[in-house]
Image 1: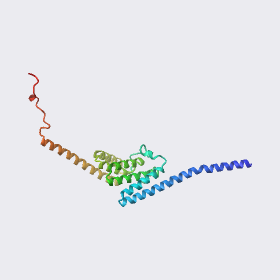
Image 2: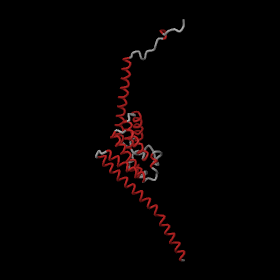
Image 3: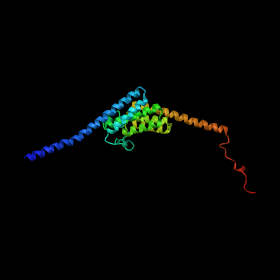
Image 4: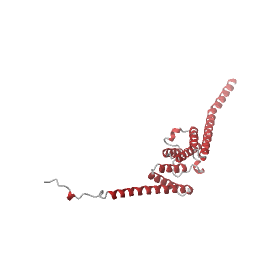
Length: 230
C-alpha cells in the first residue's frame, strides 16, 4: 500500500511539474507583449511631440518584444503571414475584423504602420514603403498601413503604381468604409493631378523639341535619294 501511495504521489508530482512549462510560457508571452506595448506607447508619445528619432527608437524596441510574443518567427514577416489575407478585411482597428487576429499580430502591424508614418515625415520613402509592407504582412486588414503605402509610392514618384494601388484599395473598400474612402479618394486625386502635370510637362517638352527641329519627323523623299545605278 505504501508503495502504491508513493507511486500515486510521484505521479501527482509529475503532473504538477508538467503544467509548469505551459504556465511559464504564457507568463513569458504576456510579459513580452506588455513590454512591447509599453515601448509602442512611448513611441506614440514621441511621435505626437514631433520627436521622430525617439519615436522610431521606441518602435524598434516594440517590434523586438511583439515579435517575440508571437508563436511564429519574426522571419515570417519576410515571407508568408499566418493572417487571413481576404481583401474585404481591411481595417485592423475594427472590432469585427480584429476578432480573428492575434493581439500581437495587430499590435505589430500598428507599430510598423506608425514607423511608416515616421519615415513619411522624414521623406524616407523607401523605408516608409518597407514598413508599410511589413505592417500588412502582419495584418492585411490595416487600412492606415494601406494608406501610408500609397503615400510612400507617391513620394517615390512611382505615380502609376500609387494610382493603381489606391484604385484597387477603393474597390476593395466598397461602401462599407465611407470614412476611409474620403482619405483614399483625396490621395488618389493628388496622384492623378501629379500624373497629369507630369504628362503635360512631357508633351510640352516634345512640342518644344519639334519647334526647334521642324524636320525631326519628316520622311526623306525616295525620289531625291542618290541612285546606285550608273
